[in-house]
Image 1: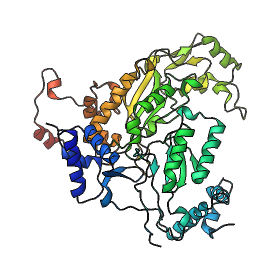
Image 2 (image 1 turned 135 degrees about the horizontal axis):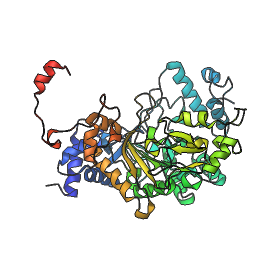
Image 3 (image 1 turned 180 degrees about the vertical axis):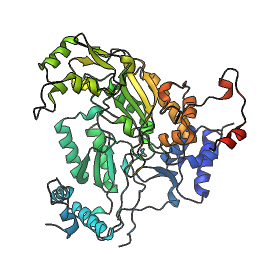
Image 4 (image 1 turned 135 degrees about the vertical axis):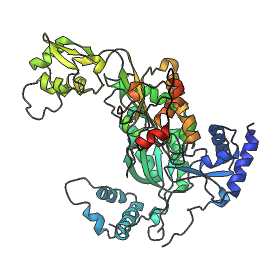
Amino acid sequence: MALSNEELKAAILKKAETAPKPQLYIKDFYACDPDSKPRVIKNAANDLVKEGKLMFWSSGSTTMYAMKDRIKNEEGESGVN
Amino acid sequence: MAKHETPLLDELEKGPWPSFVTDIKRQAEKSPQCWDILGQLELSFKERITHWKHGGIVGVFGYGGGIVGRYSDVPKRFPGVEHFHTIRLAQPASKYYSTKHLRDICGLWEKYGSGMTNMHGSTGDIIMLGCRTEALEPFFYELTHNFQQDLGGSGSNLRTPANCLGQSRCEWACYDTEEACHHLTMHYQDEIHRPAFPYKFKFKFSGCPNDCVAAIARSDVAVIGTWRDNIRIDQAAVKEYIAGNIPSNGGAHAGRDWGKFDIQKEVIDLCPTECMWMEGGELKIDDSECTRCMHCLNVMPRALRPGADQGATICCGAKAPILDGAQFATLIVPFMKVSADNEFEELIEFIEKVWDWWMEVGKNRERVGETMQRIGLPTFIKVMDLEPIPQHVKEPRSNPYVFWSEDEVEGGWSRDVDEFRARHAA
């Protein structure tokens, strides 16, 4: 039986906190609940972004999800030169 | 007055062609940060390495697309490009806008960004190049509140849908491409503005097989207008073309004298399926052989028109990457009625079936055409609840695409694969 929306969001957050890589593809969250449809998982992950618990990281062609405090923010870095 | 020495870039101003270097220098007189674009690019040319960092976490509140983060890795040397984000604006259907609107958009971009634009990007959006993070929200507020324009798609989102001029100006359009594009854009706002997929996804709408938005070459779902009855022939107009009273090709190619119009040489002999001929002074067409190449209609537009039973062909799986791996779309549905009367219900149902399958089985950063190729067309056709048809076969025998299983053939069959492979290596 598929998880409820709140249970699914909690599972996604746990995965984002504990995964070895800080940035995750949406498909990386599918394992959080194999009984939920990909679209339901996508909606839950996007809700977590709206709530400020996850952030989008985009290369321009692909978008990934990350916990705010796990992701390196390019802004404010002085760079190599 | 140039801020940096750019001898390598200056080379690109020589020669007969317009130069982006000249354009950026001109813009730099108004927007000094553009000098740093030139300086950083000169450095990249010298060192043969990019000085842009890859991606970022910029955006506007509530959106997960439309803004592409770009940061310099040498901001102390080139502070004007410390942040240089790209913003994609959704273009209006068919790219109709007034010059006033374009001036206003450019004015807004000079207020908040570098003033540099790219009109238009390959997907169709208006591209605004070069904005600092703190200017994104105010720019977005004015764009949406004062100009009623929205951001386009980027990342793993549905990209900004695009369409040809359609029935607004073109007599060949077999369905209302503008209405279809607008309706689906509004219907899929969530998919455009927030990531949803393993990778980018595009659909494009062409009104006829001339395919002016090149949907077949670069969209995951291409909706290309067609007809399923016969090409409409005005025999009196055919005679006028033959007599030279109507210029062929709508008067195009009139820059030199090509001689008298020759229907045999210029139309009939060029038909790829050889399905046309003259008989008793009349043009005849075996429509069952027509592959909708559009050549005869393009040459004699006043004599030939698309049939009256109009709709669209749906093709899937094209991609046009910059570096390699370009792939044309594969025909999936030869004819589908595409109509606003039922709010494009059949097309929407088709698109969502594609999405459900691709979201499930597509790999990260894999376009739907790559997934189709990896898993196979027979599976894709089954998933789409379609029956295999001859049009799905690309090359009979060498690449049949459709394989029968034993339970699908009356009487079945028995075979020993090992015994067969002993005689015929795979």
